[in-house]
Amino acid sequence: VFPRTANTILKNFLLAQGVPAGNIVEEYTPFQHQDYQTIVSKIKRFAASGNTAVLSTINGDSNVPFYKEFANQGLSASTCPIMAFSVAEDELRAMDTEFLAGHLAAWNYFQSIQTPENIQFVDNFKNYCKTNNLPGGDARVTDDPINWAYTGLYLWKAAVEKAGSFEVEAVIAALSDLEFESPAGLVKMHHDNHHLAKEAIIGKIRTDGQFDIIWGTEELVVAEPFSEFAK
Image 1 (tube, helix red, strand yellow):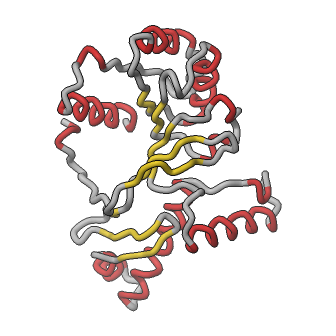
Image 2 (tube, rainbow, N blue to C red; image 1 turned 90 degrees about the horizontal axis):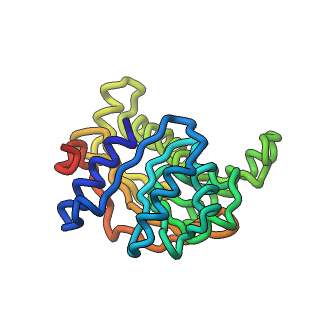
């Protein structure tokens, strides 16, 4: 569901920006797909015209063979950059980051955020992994999903404290307009629903498997549950 919905939004947005329909090509594969030779060959031919990028909504383990095949066929971030929406630091641990350097990812959090809250969060996470003998120990990394699991718990805690109660309806009411200084920065709960306003950021993959943050929104982005581009 996510890839098709995301691609619908992306395609309609690009069309609205004046990108010709003929310049937009969609390809889909099953989950856990491993053979990307044919698709990458198509991308290579398409990229030969110049000014080409890949917007990737591939999920899970399929990212590994996709990026490997991309490099095997001589494509790189300089010739055809990939903007990924499901590749984070933890996925990069299982990949050879040398051929990933320069490609992009869009998230709301990266481990490389340099704020006191995030530095402490990363240190605490690594220490926990090491102390509890988790696989990878303190070489483990944080990423966007880990951050939001953590943030969600502390939003609930703040709402309980604000409500002075564990009653579900009281906690829900207390969440309205609630703000929290998360590892990703300030976030704010919507007044009428459970959507969270947060910053959107783009990172460039480094050879060490981390991201250089190259762009971010100036203000918190308020969610559009029924985007005009999703139709």
